[in-house]
Amino acid sequence: MLRVRGTTYHFRRIVPPALRAALNRREIWVSLKTGYQNEARKRACLLHARTTEMFMQAHSALVEPDALSRLEGLRVSLRDLQSVNLPSSAQETGSVPVSAPMPKPRTIKKPAKAPKAQPLMLSGALKRFVQDNSHASADTKKATQRAVDLFLQAFGDAPVSIIGGEKAGAFRDLLFYLPASLGKRKSRLTLEEEAQRVRDEGLPTLSGKSVKNHMMRLSALWSQLHQRELVTRNPWTGWNFENGQKTIRRSWTARELALLASASWHSTSVPEQTFRLVTLIAAYSGMRLGEICTLRKEDLQTVDGIPCFMVRPHSDDGWSPKTEAGTRVVPIHSKLIEAGILALKDTTDGPYLIPGLETSKQGVRGAALGRAFSLLKTRIGTSRNHLPFIPAYCFHPTQKCRCQYQRGLD
Image 1: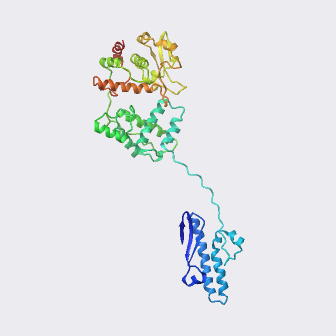
Image 2: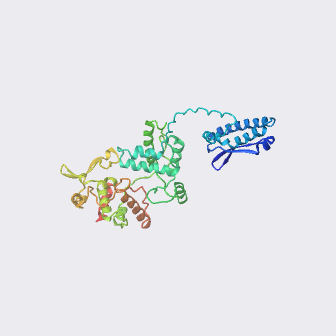
Image 3: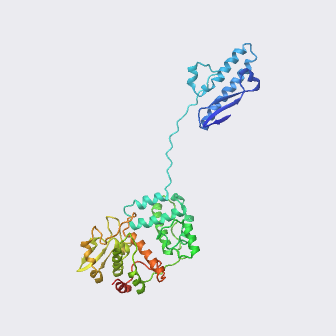
């Protein structure tokens, strides 16, 4: 039978009681010189056959006249049993085997198996089809990265082929329980802990639109996977997003704009002059934060004698407006001309029109300003007049609020 010592298998067999005195041993113990069980079994079978033959010869020798010399030869053979595993040793030592060794079975080399293909993980699909896609815009890359990061935080990385409707539904349900401020502040809490904090403190949750946006980003990724037959179906489509908290967008009031214009600026990553300049342009143009922050000097042009902002894609960094309709010409308001906007083209260093902004690791210019602005809304809304500055107040004031905002700056 087989025994293991350390990492090596050994063969052990008890000598029959009638032969112990003749063979001068109680058991046979031989190292098989291998740590692989299958190979050890093959060698043990060979040793079992050899020892059985020796025992039979020993029984016969006991009844013959020259028993003593025959038995002495068997004792030598027992000591040399390890030569079964090392065929050359028998020739070197000159030992005579009791019977002819069994020929080794002819081994047929099996064809090498092709390496098993590794499953495509969600993180790998994100990198391959989104982050490394030269045709994807910076906004698409950022938004898809955010959606995938949330999924990975909740469920961990997994092959895309096993992510189905159950996981998609669980992710959707979890999103509806997360706070509306998720991602706008640093937090060490897990998503489950964030959801529990929402329940304990009664905080506002992500809107149905935000949940839908995350699901749509994953759906767009899965559409590529399905088209390439890497998945059998797209589990991110067909969901209802009506049971979440709806956010009603409204205009800033005159009082709120005056409060915003008079608020002190505490960000160290964005100069106050830049904050005032960007919000002024937003108030008199209706442009989005990303559109303003990515304006180039060549985007300030005169069209039919009227100074205009040219909102258009930038091929060098992959930035483009949020929608196709976002590519447009925006006339520059007279108040902005009076504020010296046209002079920025000659006084600002670098290719961008708005100074004092850095590009984030995700390739988004003005990301720091967006975060600082959200913190400012919260600070002046809760510490001064308890105004609910939640996402219902978008970044840029609407047309009817611009005159009040200008008076606040003056």
